[in-house]
Amino acid sequence: AQSVAQPEDQVNVAEGNPLTVKCTYSVSGNPYLFWYVQYPNRGLQFLLKYITGDNLVKGSYGFEAEFNKSQTSFHLKKPSALVSDSALYFCAVREGQAGTALIFGKGTTLSVSS
Amino acid sequence: DTAVSQTPKYLVTQMGNDKSIKCEQNLGHDTMYWYKQDSKKFLKIMFSYNNKELIINETVPNRFSPKSPDKAHLNLHINSLELGDSAVYFCASSHPTTGELFFGEGSRLTVL
Image (tube, rainbow over all chains, first blue to last red; front, side, top):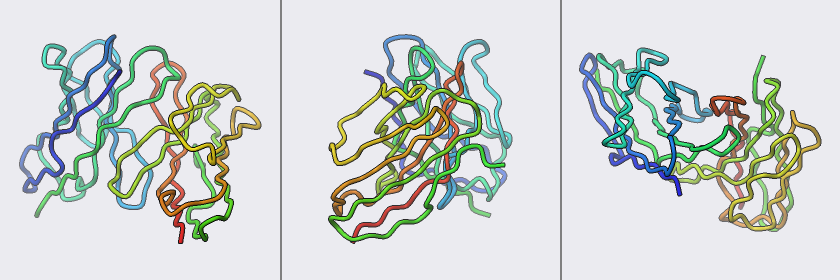
């Protein structure tokens, strides 16, 4: 069965510093990996995805993620954090054909201080 | 022009009541989902429909019944509401090739 782990409940970083939010996954086939962000009392917004191709994926708002097959990881990164990046971040995975549900990690709260 | 819209956004009701949440998407996607987000923010898949046909039905009490009148709509009806049903329910639809999910804004259900 597929699963996703986000080992950190919370990540704290100062504005202007680089940030990393960690994600590891487990699937039996090829993974389709996603990052979503949720602001308070809002729905989830798509940030980026890895389907195939380059291991470094660039997404919205300056975020990027690196797919590492040997470590089964898909960490989210940003070179310079903004206070407005403070939110709840979810990593998700699916395997197989489109139409199967995404399985989400438990989420990581990112707090960026000014 | 909202892609995935849910109504109502907030729902407060008494235990034992029956309530429904409606969802509509204008993206032309074939597959729609209901997810439940609990108080700890965990997101759990409940149901998935593909072109009006149920394809995922996770371990959810049979008090929850999804209905899809057409592929643009997926409604969720809940009978005999319990305190533990309090949560935010998200509707989503998925891109046909990448599987990217497009979420509604959520419906916050509070059972008193």
